[in-house]
Length: 367
Image (tube, rainbow, N blue to C red; front, side, top):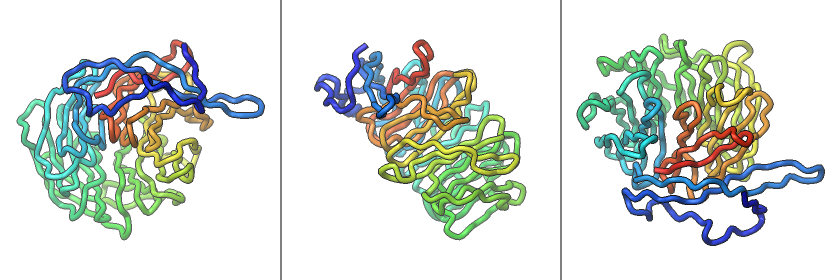
């Protein structure tokens, strides 16, 4: 295995070109590099390790991808600047279906659990409901926000949808009828993300006012506000057991740029922080416990890096740099060993956790 010090300039043949210059439908093999840090008594050294070749499939989108979510263990749905929602089989590298209806770029997608149905939100202020096995036209169009929709969360029983917007408003919808059942507005609460707590009536929300709010869907009232952070909170995720949540901060040059673990059940205090990114942290996920003996989380950032962290100690265990990707925008768990990561320049990256030589994260495909 070839090892190169980070301060050395990579050879020209190792440079990865923009994915959109490749021909659609052509399968390509490319070399990738992952990075990690290890300590010596007097310094910290970052090294580049040449890893296995990865495959480049026909792209799901021909422009920036802003969001990706897993529909099931084989399929994901994604959206971006091309105004299209795409269902993609990331195991075979094939587009399953394209959905068109939005007039502006897609900002969020959210899947109905154990279903072929999902929602998309857009800068056109509309939320649309789609069915993988139905027509290419939306089953429902939900109109109620006056600005771009920036949050989508489906209830655990799939009966309700919560939406949030830059208009400072949250709306609660009946999924069957498509009617608004609750509305709430908080001054300067510019919503950046929403997620529903498993098996609970609570919705977690991040905001540009640097706060993390917990809403009770029964009446859509704020049940708790976590201590304000120093930077805008960009994203949130709740653990499968509903006991903990993570939020992410924006930032630049290492200021901000952290993820924070919070207790959702007892003290509701901050448990741990994960620092090491140098630009805005755009997304975070709890990794399946089957991956390691310790609980792990993963983060993606505008610094083109995906990091794996020890959830309990805050230690960064591995860093993967996706050269040429541009800012990373969204992260989703594909299956027990796979992650899907959306980016500005190179579409969606399929990443795999490898334990053959210790904990590693490798890019195996891009689409």
